[in-house]
Length: 271
Ligand code: SF4
Image 1 (cartoon, rainbow, N blue to C red):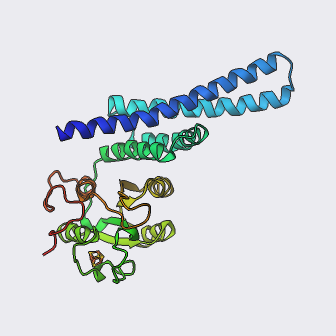
Image 2: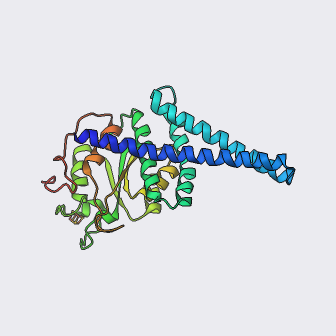
Image 3: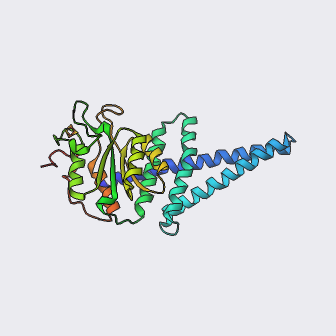
């Protein structure tokens, strides 16, 4: 039953992204028709033709992106992941702008983008070693009153179990990946530059994940959204099972070897 619920949410999220993409396509098509009408009425020809060519190019580009993305989902094979992921990335700004225009919460589109991106990225088989993987976590996972400087060195954590860093360290013990806690997007990008991982599991809010994934292409990055029960950037949480699932995908493994099920914080995961 739980599985069924998850897949329904997943399908719903994908539809949001594809829906916005198709609306963007429709808006551009209408703009092209309006320009053609202006030209037929003898309006400033040069400007109208210039705009029409611009809208036409974007229209063709967007249509091809949506087609390749739809093809990637329907046929699964046949379209290289790189093209499909690039298509998602190119559609995303249009969908986001449209959501803004209609006053729709942009995080809904970002979440949908992440869902589509993760699904496509996971289809690419990888068999990385733990050492080739970086798990990037945001500093806001840490308890606000914790005095240990984990952004400098995660091993400074005393594993008291009050925040998800404890569970992430337990996962690191099992899989041997690099774990870094970042204080912001710039630091996260720097860590990727320095450590040169072949795969990344990034934990962050929708906004940071969406921009980070775009900036680090073609690196395989799987995004895991953090939960913010106490508001943004404050003592956030993460579903460790989702982190582990992303790790297993990068490692090319099927089975979990570590965490107690359904544990958000990973209490008791450490010895
Ligand atoms: S698990 Fe405990 S010691 Fe470690 S970062 Fe969280 S609050 Fe601090």
